[in-house]
Structures are given as structure tokens and as C-alpha cells.
Amino acid sequence: MQFDLLHVGTLVALAHILGVAAACHAILNTRTSQGAIAWAVSLVAMPYLTLIPYLFLGRSKFAGYADARRVENELLRAHAHPPEWDRLASSAQLPAHALGGRLVHSLTRLGGMPFLPGNSVRTLVNGTATFEAIFQAIENARHYVIVQFFIVRDDALGEMFKDALIAKAQQGVRVYFLYDSIGSFDLPHRYVASLRAGGVDTRPFATNRRFVNRLQLNFRNHRKIVSVDGERAFVGGHNVGVEYLGGKPPLSPWRDTHIEVRGPAVASIQFVFTEDWYWATQQLPQLDLPPAPPPDLAAPSDPAYSAHPATGHDMHCLVVPSGPADKQETCSLFFVEAINAARERIWITTPYLVPDEAVFSALRLAALRGVDVRILIPSRRDHVVVFEASKLYAYDSLRAGIRIFRYQPGFLHQKVVLIDSVAAAVGSANLDNRSFRLNFEIMVMTVDRDFAKEVEAMLLADFAESREIDRNEYRHASALRRVLMHVARLFSPIL
Image (cartoon, rainbow, N blue to C red):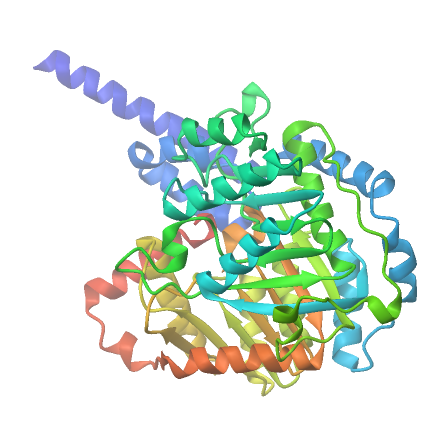
């Protein structure tokens, strides 16, 4: 008995020593002070529970990876960027509206992408519309298809997607398929093998190319990109899985939004894919952009597309990619700048409301200066800790005059930002620390009043199916529930 206690005591002491060492490492290597504190406190107080998670998830400053990725990206942007960027970006006029001009000026410098005219953008509301449009585009592909998703499931939708890609590859179309190795961790080998056997160039995206980084799981490619022949591209919140079609109770019906982009901005979207593909393969995909059509032929000829109510053919678009290798914290600063630019309203939909201090301060200040600040979040949860932390941020937001709505019919997963009546952004970024600092994300901002009106109508329909929360929900919550929310928020910097 004494011998066993001696061993137990030795193990406990060793766990605490390792916890202190890991806490010191977290203080030196975690990107934010809040994250460093969260890890350090938990490692010192509960090393038995947090040492293993820290081994896999602890690093948010990944210097070796970030430096290598940054060098590769800078080389690509200097030598392999689309030639149309220079001509079109130099001829693009900043929006006449002061808000649009200021916002575009700062975000072009932040994201390193040009502000391009001559685009058409349409919303694709929910999974059926999104995947019908994507499958149609793939079916009509003549030269190449690029596909990138965070999550790919081996289910009914995944099988349809696989069959569609293989069919095009067997027709001689070049098909590039990139999936995140963490988001798609349960994708069977036979699925990938079938794609490769069918002629689809299929690769996983991972940041742990070197053995020393083998255990790092924190950096994930959360982008969702499909592009066909350089003519049209799809970006948004959907992944490949039946839940995105509403086929996974109790989260169904699933509420999400994608956009279809046609025009010069497609080159920017494809270039984001090129950077990721080059990191994963050390090769450049063969993506020959089509020649620019004459002005009178620039409008898309697809009747289904041109019939869309908000389809203009001279929309200005700015692609904003972000990731952990950026010199600046691009995603967080994107939200801060969009919120600060708003003069009338800023409406945001997000599945996770776990902002950092800069974004949360910008939201509160916008409400205090009279801006209509609304945030739409789910009423159903898919991640317990994140959901509880989101609830406390929601209640704190109410005190500053921010209006918080919970979507009632099903799980809300869309990532949409509406700024006044001038600009709207749709993409993959959530309002949380993981998107701000750990994930690779992409947002497409469209500066166009007609498109902003379309997004406004879509969000008004969502608000009509939502319930606005008030402070009484927190006041009437049980003591245990409030403790759980506060504990969950302690971990918000590392969620």
C-alpha cells in the first residue's frame, strides 16, 4: 500500500512539474494574452486533464510553419498572380460612398488582394440551391475543376460529389481536390483511393509536414471553394455532407449560405486555392484563366443565372483570405474594420459568438454610437462548450445595446456580414477566435447596393424566423447554468 502511494505521489508530482513547464511554454508561444492565461491556468491547476490536449492543440504561434508558409505565399504573389489583377485593379474605381471607399482601401492592404470590377454575384440559400448550382457547374466543366472543403463525408452527398468529379476526370477535365486532414479525419481511405483511381488529383491539407510538428492539430483549412474553368466560383459555409442538406436531426433543417461569383474575382478565389495547393503538394495546379470577354459580352449567358433578381454585371468584389501565417491577424481585423466602418447598421450571422476583445469592443462601440447592430446565432448547439460561452457573450452584448437573435427552425451555420446598404460579405469565417487566428478562411466582400439589398432581404427573412433574446434569460437562469457559462468563457481564447 505504501509502495502504491509512493508511485501515485510521484506521478502526481511529475504531472504538476510537466504542467508548469507546459504553462511556461504557453506563455511564450500562445498568440494572445487571453489564450496564454487560459492555457497556463488550466495546465497548472488541472495538468491531468489539459496536458494531452495542449500537446495537440496548444500552439497558436507556429513560427516555423508561419515563416515557411509566408515565404511561399509571397513568392507566389510576386511571380504567379493572375496578370489581369494589375490591369483591372489599376482601373477599378473606389465606391462613391465614403464608407465603401474607406473600407476597400484598408481591406485591400490587409488581405493583399485587388478590388476588382465587372463581377456578378448571387446568393445560394441553403444546401439544395448550393449543391444544385455546384453540380451543374461541374457537369458543364470543359477544362478544369478545383474543389476545396474543410469537411468531406462519405455519405450520400459525398458519393454524389465523388461520382461527379470522377466523371469529369474521365472526360479529360483536370480535377483538383483538396480536403483538410483534420476536418475530414474520418474520411475513409477507400473514398480517397476511388477519387485517385478515377483520375482526380486528391490531396490532404496539413500543416505538420515536418516530424517535429507531427502532433499539431490547431491549424485547419476551413475554406470552402469550388471553381470551374476560371469562369465561376463558389464560396460560403457549406461542406460536403448530408447535414448541410438538412439530413442530420436534431440540427436539421440546416441554415447556410453560399455565393456564386462570376467575373475577374474568380481569379482571386482561385489564387487562394493555388496557395493552399502549393503548400500541400509543392506543385502549381494548371489553371489557365479564360481571356477577358468584350464588355458587351461580359454578362453570363446562363438563363437561370441572369434571371436572378440581384444579378448585376458590374459588381465590385474583394476577396479577403486569412490564416495563421499572415503578418497581421487578418480575419479579426477584417471584422473590426467592417464594424468600425458601419454608420447605419452592421448585421452579422454566425454559428459561434466567441469574439476576441478587439471585435467585441468594436461591436459595443458601434451600438453606442447608434448603429443598428444585430447578431444572429443558433438556438441549437453542435459544440457544448462553445455554445455556453456564446450565451454569456450574447448576454454581455445586450447591455451595450447589441440585439441578439436566435434562429429557431434549425441549426444556423451561415457566415454573412451586411454593412449599411453598401456592402455585404459572405464566406467561411465565424465570429470566434479559431477563425480569427487558427483557421485558414476566405470572405468575399461585394460592394454593390443591389446585392446588399438582396442580402438584407435574406437576413430579414431569417430574423423573422428568430427569437430576440433579452436580459431576463440570464437573470432567470439557474446558478449552475450561469457558472457553466462563465467557466466556458474562460476557455474562449482557445476554443
